Length: 445
Image (cartoon, rainbow, N blue to C red):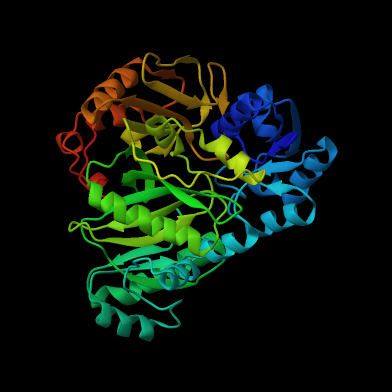
């Protein structure tokens, strides 16, 4: 087992990893930018190293600085969390070359699944259902026009290096294709430095359902059931739940087998998710694979009593997994609490938290790195907390979330708590009747 793990991340996920390491008797090293010197992950780690100024490119994305921090603290492994360098094959490879265990996927696995077009081709070879569309990247507008006619409108243009909705355009008729194609390419180039574009059939009334998987170093894989991530705004998840209210035992079995097949095909090591779009007929299609821990992993932990961070660390240390597939025994919901103003287009609201009262009680979990007096920097993602409720039934989990949101007080900055409170009262949400288009008609009161 590892003696010391450097956590190449910040905020709540860094604190989450520190907690499990402490329970396992493993020393931790926090890295931080000057903007994060007062963050709780810095305070609770055994050691902390400043790796640069506030901009991510000069700190949390600066591989030489992170490797230097690992060297001077004698860390023997690096946990990348999510975001930042967690799906960077170059970083995984550099760790490997320098005798540090990267707690995540191998460089080869990240390369296979990190690029969406490559991932789709890999999954086709694995026999996992994929959305009809282009074979690899589009080479020209003319090719896009021909393919759109073959696949049939509506279609979706997607940047191969995309994420967070950047470089994506839905096209409903051929007259709109040229402008959408040009706009998507320009946005992808500006956002990722990669204008590569591919095309897929647009799935109508889609739900975004992901399957949590774990694989060890010996070829054994298992799935830990599903999470429904369909409540999204601009392709950014707002809340997640498990089990999905859309799920049936037959669909769960089929999707679980497909996710295991995907992981097995690439000899996947570590925790990851296979993400699917599911249409109104319960036909599902591979969308992408995330070769890292997910923001929403706590709801899976809650319903099957399973520490995913501990499992990541054990797998990285060479411990075999049982190979047992899991099904949810309870119902769990997560609300992402962002420092954003939901009444003003979800505009970011950094600043000093003047007062904070955290909810508690049976079945309530709060993952956060903020506290009263903490100043939220403007340099990073606006998520400041994850509020999770767990109960015997979905209705009880919603009731518990309403109560917890009412108790949750954050003053000094705007947050998305009012949005989530209204969501919990929305009749379509209560009925489990929602798709990824839900937010297009949601009106905040």
